[in-house]
Image (cartoon, rainbow, N blue to C red; front, side, top):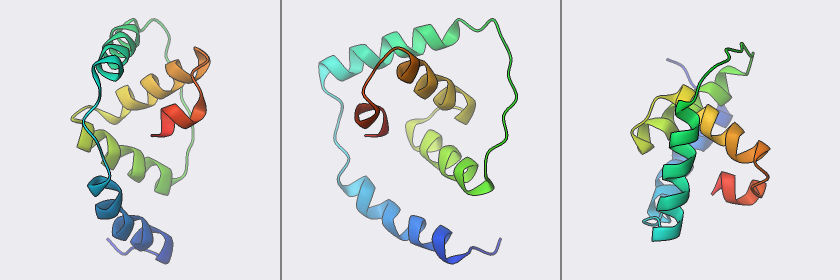
Length: 91
């Protein structure tokens, strides 16, 4: 697969970002567990279109967390609509 300049930059930054990653605190763990449980309550289906770059980034991030990318997307959306600050979601 041929990568463009933006994609190469993201891959180069990935190691730097991972080196700054921290183990979640007990509070963060509890929050993630609640979000995961809420994510499992699926009763509607949607279809969205996103860029290939964004999808690739989501798949990579989900892979690092050991979860399917659809679950990651659902979790992020749930946390957003629940009123969590955007900065917390992105971290």
